Amino acid sequence: MSGSCFLSSRGNEYFCEIDEDYLTDRFNLTGLNTEVQYYQYALDLVTDVFDMEVDDDMREHIEKSARHLYGLVHARYIVTTRGLAKMLEKFKNGVFGKCPRVICESQHLLPMGQHDIPNMSNVKLYCAKCEDIYNPKSSRHNSIDGAYFGTSFQNILFQIYPAMLPQKTQRRYEPRIYGFRVHASGALMRWQEEKREEMKDRLKARGIETGFEDEDDEDLDDESDIDEEQASQEGIDDMFEGNAQRVR
Ligand SMILES: [Zn+2]
Image (tube, rainbow, N blue to C red; front, side, top):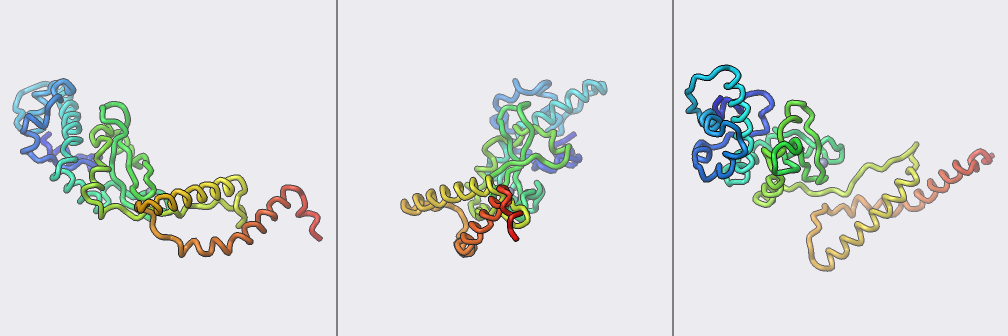
């Protein structure tokens, strides 16, 4: 199992190929010898120089260690210039999938960890548009350790390639029942929107870019909505108070 052989096996699409130069530079592997069992054998396997005769059991142990070692080095490699460029290509090609949220309009995702320490949590997918994280759809991807990507990679990538950051959107799904806004969540949403406008005004006053797309045009019909909204709200109140039945 060499590095490239490891990558070609199913479920490993999230990983990029680590340069041989990087893998053979001991400095890049600092501290990993205590983290990985059969470290030297695992390293030999990853760098394709393993040539010892071992039984199947031992072979399996060493291969498992090699996969772990590759993952841990991968987390370090993908924040280097070369590694970032490779992961960016995968991101552009949609290798990590698309955001399942309808309003994110198939925004491409990036893999990330919630922990930098292995065996804590599995890899998650980050959407830069809604700034939320998702579980991978396939169980093969779902079992990958999040530490093989780390907690900083996705943020570093957007810092190095800011043009890749999507415009954020304020749009979101509004719960409605037969066209009427649902009362409790509607009230919460109005409150949240108010707070967000306040925040944007404060940021604007200080000359800070909010990163939200300018959606004022789309909001215009919101103002004309107010009457309709109030009317529909009264309609709902009527329904709950039983007034609706009184209408002749
Ligand atoms: Zn999203």
